[in-house]
Every structure is written in structure tokens, then in C-alpha cells.
Amino acid sequence: MEKIINPFSIKLTKNNTLPAAQAMLYATGLKEDDFNKAQVGIVSNWYEGNPCNMHLNILSKKIKLSVKRNGMVGFQFNTIGISDGMSMGTSGMRYSLPSRELIADSIESVVKAQHYDGLIGIPGCDKNIPGIVMAMLRLNRPSILVYGGSISSGSYNGKKLNIVSVFEALGEKNIGKISEIEYKNIIKNACPGPGACGGMYTANTMASCCEAMGITIPYSSSSLANSSYKKQECIKIGKYIKNILLKNIKPLDIITNKSIKNAITLAIALGGSTNLVLHILAIAKTANLDLSLDDIQNINNNVPIIANLKPSGDFLMEDIQNIGGIPIILKYLLNEGFIEGDCMTVTGKTIKNNLKKITEISFKKKIIYPLFNPIKKIGHIRILYGNLATSGAVAKITGKEGNFFSGIAKVFNSENSANEAIINNQIKKGDVIVIRYVGPKGGPGMPEMLKPTSYIMGANLGNQIALITDGRFSGGSHGFVVGHITPEAQNGGLISFIKNGDVIIIDAIKNTLTLKISKEEIKKRKKNWLAPPLKVKSGYLYKYTKTVSSASNGCVTDKFEL
Image 1: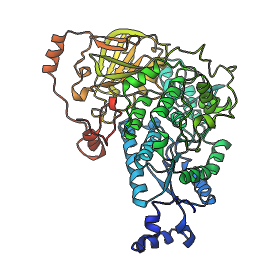
Image 2 (image 1 turned 135 degrees about the vertical axis):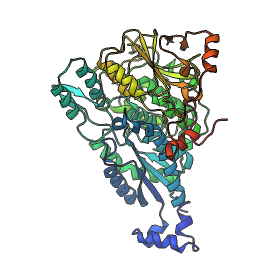
Image 3 (image 1 turned 30 degrees about the vertical axis):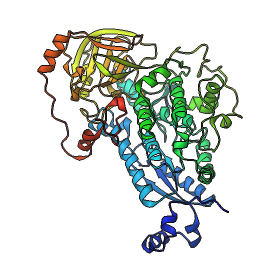
Image 4 (image 1 turned 45 degrees about the vertical axis):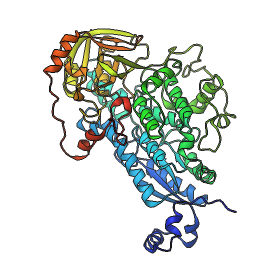
């Protein structure tokens, strides 16, 4: 007896009391025989205004053809995307993180309303990826993620370029290190075509996590957007979705405590983005799995950084693909006992079986270092606590910045005012820049602080100052930076009481973040503090401020905090 792989769509296609639904399916071009086939939703974050996403409709069409060739019906649909790189440093960045929730909500809505039996998601920019994964977990129908792929590197004057190069170039221009002409040419040549930002920034971090979790097929995270590998992935993906429909392998069978640990382990080994913390917490909460900031810290304490990747290193995702892709690194970590091999994946096999025929890693090119001689002996993601972060904060400490910083606070109630101060050379050695009221509620939307951190690096201040914020950082940020401070300023966290001239201590050995003032002074300042009005009073961001959880709980909106 043939196995039923269309348990949801059959409720429309074989229900004699729903003639209108069937008439509409005929209108889409379906034939009588198609009503017996599984229906697969094929969702992409395609839109033309961003290199990360502009090619996704092309991939989606290839995938639809692959689904058809494997005896199923594919229906393409779209969800939103927002360019972090383009909105960075503008009011538009407030929509970036909240877009993750819109993506998950919209996919859940379409798949459940349209009764699709399975789902293939094609994300590009970084919030796209966790948004799609969260939707897959909510739906828990056979699903596969196909990453849109990373961009190829740009080039100018023989130097490799990527998106962060242009932010840092502005800082270099402002101190006279490069000319206006050089600055313009860096802008023109940094992004040569389609694909997500090329370093181990948030998109590539989360794509790598998805491969480690098993929700993509091997090589999906490291094959470039315009490569033959990515085309081949789309061509054969129909076979994989058919297989997991037949075996009824669902996202909750794949994304488990073990596979999430694998994802965090890989991301730390690669030196991934601090946005990993927000997104992996949100994914775990959506899957009803227990995961805390302390769990992430415990993994971090036992995983060395072995990847020499930007922003702190020298190489890009294209270089990872050239040495054998993410599978070659996963196999190395598996062989050394750092990841679990018995986790199920969308191939219908365990991760260990997927990696059986993968060749052994070589360390000749100094892109990946051996575990016995790592770039850093423990991970770069530090979870800090202290009077400034009673519910936690997230620091990205690669080791190049040192592990301790004590400095004088320079306080800014917006990113723009901080940026102006940096550009106008008002920040000096020993300062701790404080950017507050930019958290999930105060921002709103917890905007990324890539602009100020890039200005800092471009002005050669990276080892001389620190920056702390209740906002977050781009995967492209580096330097002595601490974000995700909770409670945030809008909720009356201690960060809201800091004054210019206060001493702030960041200790990445003891994992503490401290404002050096007395308890009496804290009480005095708290008594005189009033929460500022929300920056928005209507629209989506207003709804977001009313439902979003704290950064320490992943900023989810569908599981309310008491």
C-alpha cells in the first residue's frame, strides 16, 4: 500500500464539500492527477532591493521544477526580507530584528491556511534564516532549508573586499588614511553580485548552524550564491523533500537539544556572530527546548576558535568552500568528539552518516587551525553578568582586544549621537562608549551597532576604547564590545542610570560587567529616573514593543514573559 504523503492537502483536494477550493486549484493549472500528489510550499525571502535576496526567486523556480520532477506539486510564495546592510545606521534598522517574527508569522499563516504537506524555505539575509526555521518548527511538517548562499568577494587595488570594508573605509577616510577617490572605489567594488555578506557574519553564522542542526543538506551553508553547487542543490532538493515526506521526518525530529548544541559548537569554532545568541535562543524556545544564556556560555568555555574568518580574521565563506566546505569542518569536530553524530537530518540519515565520505581536513592554508593549536583556546562569546547586566549581556571577545577593560563612560541616548562623536574625534583612549535606549523596546527593535564599531576600527581605536549597549551588534562588528545588556534602559536597567565620567569595568575572564558606583548612589539615581515615552505609538513596531521578550530570552513575541 502506497504511503500517504499528502495528509494536509488532501483535506482540500479530496473533500467533496469544498468545490470552491478545488476550482481554484484547477485555476492554478493543476490537472486531475495532481490532486493525488503532495503539495509543497516553496517560500523565499526574494526581493530585488538587496544582493542577499535578489536571486532567490531564480533558486525558487529551480526548486519548483525539482519538486515537480519528483512527482509533487510545488507552490511558490514569498515572505518579506529587510537588508541589514542597507538599513544599518538608519531608522530602518529598527525593523530588522522584528522582521524575523513577521517572517515566521507569515509562513505559518500561509502553510496552515493553504494546507501544504511540506515546506522548502529559501532565505538570504540573516533574519530570514531564523524566521524560516521558527516557522518550520511551529508547523512541524517535513521541511528543508536551502540557503541562498554567500556573496563572492569584491576587489580593489588587489585587496579583497566585503561589506564591512565600506564601513571601515569611512573611518579611514575621516582620519586621512585613504582619499575620497579610494573611498568611492571601495564602495563600488565591495559587492560584485548576489549573495549574503561574505564573512562569518550573522547570515553565514546562522546558515552554518542550520547545516549543523541538520535542517539543510550538506554544503548548503558554504556554497556561494552564484555557484554551480548552489544550482545543483536546487535541482536535487525535490528528491530530499520527497524522501522526508515518505519517512515523515519533521523539524522537531531534527532540531533537538543535541543538534542545537552541535550548531552552537560549530558557530563558536567558526568565530560566529553574537546574533547567534538571540536566534538560537528563539529557535530553542520555538521548539520548546530548554536553552539559557548559561548553557551557551558553558559550550563556549569548551570550544576553541579554529577559523581565521572575517570580521576578526582574514578569510571569507568562499575560502571555506574552496577547502571542502562546512562538511569538512563538521567531520573534523565529529572525529574529535565535539559534536554528536547520531542526530537526524533532512537527508533522512544522521549527521555521522552524511559525513562518512567527506575527506579529512587540511590545515595548510591557515584558514582552519587544528584544535590543539587554535586561534583562541576558548570561544569568543562571553555571557557577562554584574550590576549592569543582572539578566546577562553578550560580549564578543576574540582575544585580540584583550580580556579586561576599565574606562570612563561617555553616554549617548542614541546611535546617531555616538556616531557623530566618533566621527568628530570626540572619543579618546580609555573611553567606554555607552549607547542606550536601543534595546528591543527602547530602540525599538534592538538595532545593530555596526556603524559605530566600524567607525571605531576605521579610526584605529579598536584596542583603545570599549562600547557597551542594550542594542546588539552585526556579525561584522569587532573590537571590545558588549551588547544585549538586560534589563534594557527602557525597562529601567542600570544602564539607564550611567552618567558621563562613571567608571565601567568589563572583565571577560570573570565574565562581569560592572558600574563602579555605590548602592546608595544607584538608589538615588533610580529614584530620579523616569522611563522615556516609547519612540513609536502605532504600527508594527508599537505592537512589537508590547509583545517582545527580553534579549536574554531571544526577543520572541509568541511566548510572553510574566
